[in-house]
Image (cartoon, rainbow, N blue to C red):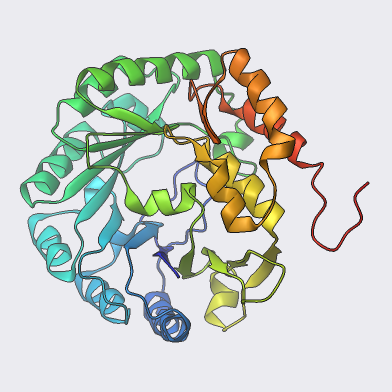
Amino acid sequence: MMQGLYVHVPFCPTICPYCDFHVVRRHGGVVAAYLERLAEEASALHEQYPGPLRTLYFGGGTPSFLRSAELWALFTTLPWEIGGAEVTLEANPGTLNAERLQLLRSLGVNRLSLGVQSFQDDVLKTLGRAHGRKGALKAVEMSLEAGFCTSLDLILGLPGQDCEADLREARALGVGHISAYTLQIEPGTPFALANLQPDEEQEARAFEQAEEILGEAGFVRYEVSNFALPQQESQHNRVYWQLGFWGALGPGAAAHLPAEAGKALYAIRASNRPLPRWLAGEAPATEEIGPLEHAKEALMLGLRLREGVDVGRLEARTSLDLWSPLRSVVEQMASEGYLKVVGKHIRAKSLNTIHPLILRLWNALDSISPPGTTPH
């Protein structure tokens, strides 16, 4: 079953100097061509996975940058039933007004993810953001008044940033969800070419502050980079972290879909081509995901969650004996104070230290031979 659907809208009014997503500026008739191709792709995917959907997510790019008629066309080309689904749209503060918010509500959007990044004008200028502090605050106010479940994106640990001030301001606004990230310097971006180097110690302190400051207001760090009030977690992102199945539409978008019954595979990962090749109808690149690879990915993603991973459930999903190779490593990490273990359920005691844990668990699973091979 396809639980969620991701729709990539690649158009942005400006391209930030840290961004390496598949984004473009609108030009000529490219948006109309995008919508036409998206309708064809959606129809084909709906035939295979008619739904209904649990979650629908419009990411980018800046989906809210589309004009009103284009937004209407975007939603009406999708043939799935979305009543009762969590429907999220990413938005930048400068692209919102009361009329636009009313349109989004009428189209079925019930959750907005606002790319605020900071409430400090100097920091926003460094990040190349088109909005300032006042624009960010106004967008949050309008989103809440319009009745959206509202999530903020923040970047923490930036040079010259007062992280405590940003976190205290974010928690006081009345939003239900805050995603907090560190700045990733990706190859080829202007920040990389300028040799900007993040301060890892500053970033680590920022997340300690986030857990403390947001926790005081009732936010729970339910995933490494995500904090939510009760019942405000992102259900779409949970599909990713729990390695469910989701479809993807649009250039550069990636899907994780169930493999055909009877094959010694667990899933198919399909990655759409960049915009020009996608518009030309070129098929996505596909990768076969076997049960063991699925188990390793599920461990990696599941340990990012506060609730952790049920290895027994993974064994049922993959028909693999995972606990035998994992048990001694899990027990050792529990004795070292890194893991909490109940039966076959494991979770990290601190979400700040998961990366070395994942590596140790992966190494333990390397002893499992894929189906059809002879054990070493």
